[in-house]
Length: 56
Image (cartoon, rainbow, N blue to C red; front, side, top):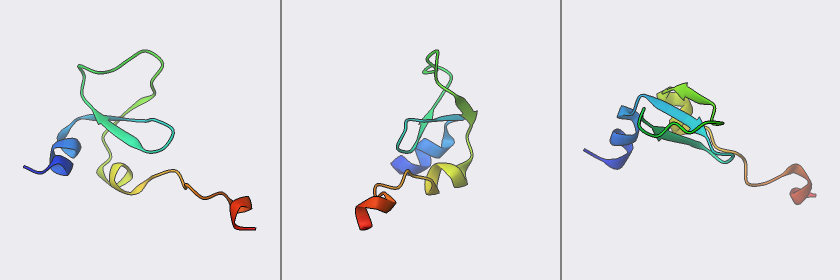
């Protein structure tokens, strides 16, 4: 099993400010907005590292 497959097998995910992190029920800290795993969001959403003003 690949690391990516293992990550999407977890039931939950949370946003760390840069990307979604896969987690399970053993690692849910207070203050995290934990969501049910959405494989599409987990694999494809990241915070853009470039800001608009950096390109000007």
